[in-house]
Length: 157
Image 1: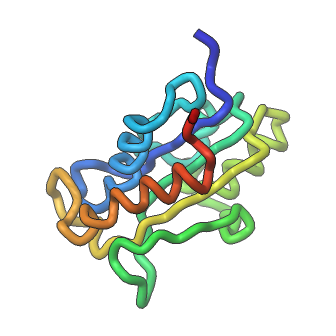
Image 2: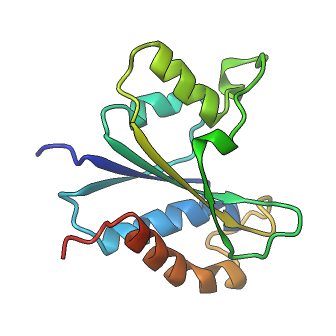
Image 3: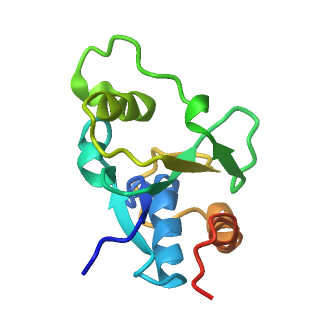
């Protein structure tokens, strides 16, 4: 089967409560879209490990959690790659952030996606060991799924 042109990358760890919201949202989007058009991958990897996952796609949609000062739990943030600062002199390769990962991939002439959308869902705490999201985040998920599907034109109607 041919690879889809769009990759949805659900980031996070499902055993760390709200940290797994990116994975949960990505999986729910998968349930509501045609697999001929999108591939959905769960990832707790970071840094250069992501290049093996994302290369070869035309479009990348990243869904992850975020914790900002003053943010409302369940709020959906839209970020651009330009909002992410490259890592300055990382002390280890696994400390490279997403922006630097993309730069390295481009520098190595890898097929890094041209179109990248980043969605971050505001959470309260990513350090609680529990499966599933908090009730506040869980209530926001259906609306977030619908918003991303609509904004990224992921329906095959």
